[in-house]
Length: 175
Image (cartoon, rainbow, N blue to C red; front, top):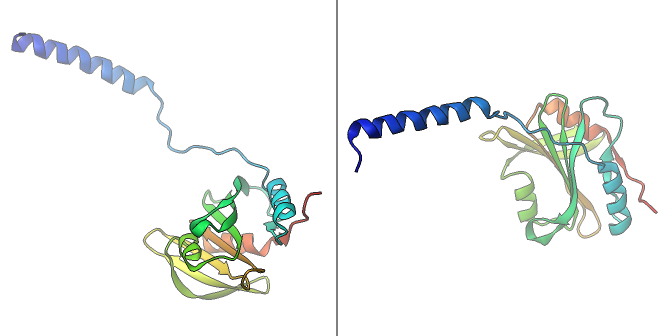
């Protein structure tokens, strides 16, 4: 067994190694996600599902799609999802589904509470807020099994969410 002075010397040497490692290992404050071909995935999904998929067009600089997927969501509802980084650095998650259920909607707005409605580009959206997460969601519900439900949730300013929704246009399915 070692003596107390030997233990303290060993701990000092180990501490120097740990400090050296902490000093040379970079720490990342944010991870940049690469852009994806959201328009291509939307066109492919529209052709596959025959849904009237919508995507924003002409948003300008600073709007970057980072996720584009088509997969089962809550309640196994097939969902086309895109995530966009906005010019302010916030995110907008945009989900589209036919036959959306109530649990799908609740999950899509992250348990936000209904807080009235808003009209964007002539379309009326239900407005959901979650003040604890500082998120805002706009939802327009489809009509039963044939209509497309849209849910857009943002962590950024409301005007960016409105700009995003105002730029929505129907996608041409790929051939």
